[in-house]
Length: 159
Image 1: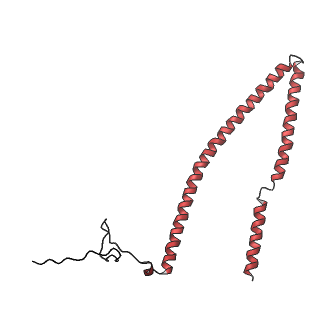
Image 2: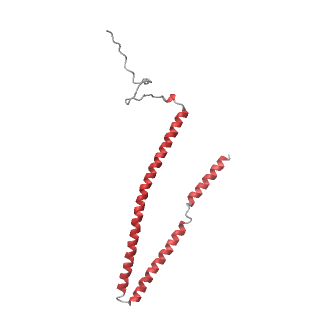
Image 3: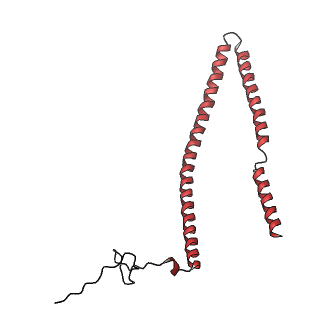
């Protein structure tokens, strides 16, 4: 009885078309030269599109999480503002009571009220200056830069 032995397949040999992968699915390997450049560009385009979509989904999820934290933080700041306002009122009442030891009550209240009005006026003047520096709200440098870019693109297109 004679048995024939097949030589083991070479490692660098292309797999047979009827070869199967470990999960039982047909296994076909394509050489890069087998695919057209157009097909490769199409694949790359599809992969880039998929990557961009995944990145956008990740950014959206991250921004939702940050938005929730921002909302929570904003609420905490609002609560701090309310308690700070109440504390300022208590401080004003305390200042009136202390000044009442040396001045009549009505005059002590008038002095504290005048002092608070001066502080409020100073804050309003400084705040108005800062707001006027920030207007207009549009990002002027960016707008100018985009206009310059558009002008250059138009100029190069006409050449």
